[in-house]
Image (cartoon, rainbow, N blue to C red; front, side, top):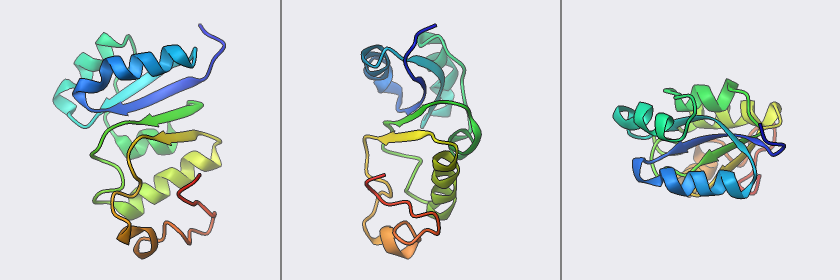
Length: 127
């Protein structure tokens, strides 16, 4: 067990080594992964020696970790923007740091329309 952060990652199938490198660099512990390709999620979790997670929003809203690393270009901030915002607010309330390598939401139009900029809890894109 490392002294670094516990990390959950949501990734595309070809990003396993990239995620492994990030976790090692942070001296963290990968405690779960999910994938935009659910057919490969179990394989990826096995390759990364961690638990597979099947529900992106559920993992973000309720799984226990210090960091939620989002590297997938699909799945979050694309279609269910209100559900995504709610999941992010839940993570924020629990003190989880969400690190996304892709824009959230996926469209700048959604920043205001779905309430990303005026959420009651004050989530802003920089957070």
